[in-house]
Amino acid sequence: MPVETHGRALELAETHGTPLLVFSPERLQSAVDRLQAFTGRLPFPTEVYYSYKTNYLPQLCVLLSDHGIGAEVTSALEYHLARRYCTPQRIVVNGIGKMAGLLQHAATGGRPRLVNLETDTEIEHLGALTGDGDPLAVGLRACLPGVSGERGSDPSVHWRRGTPKFGWNSTGAEVIRAARTVASTPGAVLEALHIHAGSQVVSADFYEAVLTKTCTLLQRLRAAGITTVTTLDVGGGLASGWVGKRRTGPLFEALHAAGLRIPAREQKAPDLDGIAAAFQRNADRLHRLGIRRLILEPGRYLAEPAMTAVATVVAVRKDGPRRHAVLDIGTNALHCWRSDEKRPIVFAHPDTPGTATLWTVVGPLCHRSDSFGTVHGPSDLRPGTRVCLDAVGAYSVGDWIANTWMRPPVVATDGTVLWRRQDTADFLALAQDTEEATPHAG
Ligand SMILES: *Cc1c(COP(=O)(O)O)cnc(C)c1O
Image 1: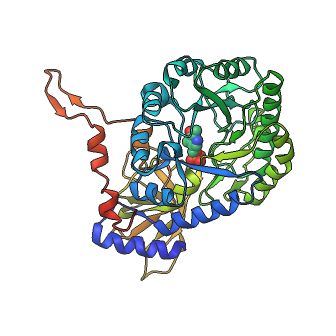
Image 2 (image 1 turned 180 degrees about the vertical axis):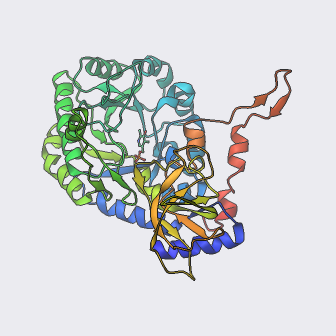
């Protein structure tokens, strides 16, 4: 329960000070339970691979692994971490890191469950990686024009706003050519289609559109003689239900482009019943096109509820009608927090139950985006008051290695190393060893 978690987080802040991040195995467990209830309603056997880049706190990874959830990795570092908890057969390999060493690692340490390719360059390397032994299971990442929630702007592939940045366009000729090349590579088997199309998705319509376009692509592949695709990997992208966001779609964007400023409806919880029903409706067609199992790669859905931040109000400022509460944590440290998203913000104020005043809660940085939102709080809010910032478990601690990799060294012009380069050992040494922290973990 949210309130229990906040109470415990505030207690821990008394011992550990602030800012503080509190990991809740109970929250993670309940997200796992809800996800497994959902996958149980899907019309095909469903394998789940947790997206490591979302948050690779070892205790979180271990708990998921204990529930039979594998790892989805996008960098060599994540692959090494995942190998602590998973056999290669429970690792799905994705992402830009493949061409930065990950493919080589994945090909030498035992066959991963699946390698999803997304560029011609990766296919060129495939021949050199497969060799003897068991065939390498390969998926092709396709992007579906018109349904992508990933607004890519990667100049190498697609420029236009609204077109996805990863994978082959599902309607083009290149995807068929790519499929043929993989299919004719000795040691590789083209087992899957990979469609990671959205993020923070809440609607069943989104999946209906994804499945419709996926069926069209499967049909085109079969017409081209490709009949080995038995797995549909629908990626991640499920909203966790904890974060409110005004979501926009094509209609909204058209109106917006025409100069109409209508507020989008705020949405929060994913419509899991509706999404399961969309899969049920498309099940026969998918089955006729050869699909026998599904893969999901949730990140945010599992990790987001599992962490709460605790901060302390360090200053209270009045500025005309506005009231600012300045915290000792900023959006640079909680950079999961986007200005168009609403997460629970809860003041600890045991002596002052009044919640009459609207407070804009900000971090200590001097830039505009360092703002967490405007919420009701006690009128006589004082410095020293603790605040819980909830649902910060996704894309907060993980981003350091997934998206920026190691911290670079700082070197003076005379060559003196002022700040040593961070390496993998430094990074992982920061996390308490899983055995030490959870003695019961197997
Ligand atoms: C980031 C990512 C995920 C996880 O996405 P969420 O929105 O956090 O569920 C899954 N698959 C791939 C390929 C990704 O890049």
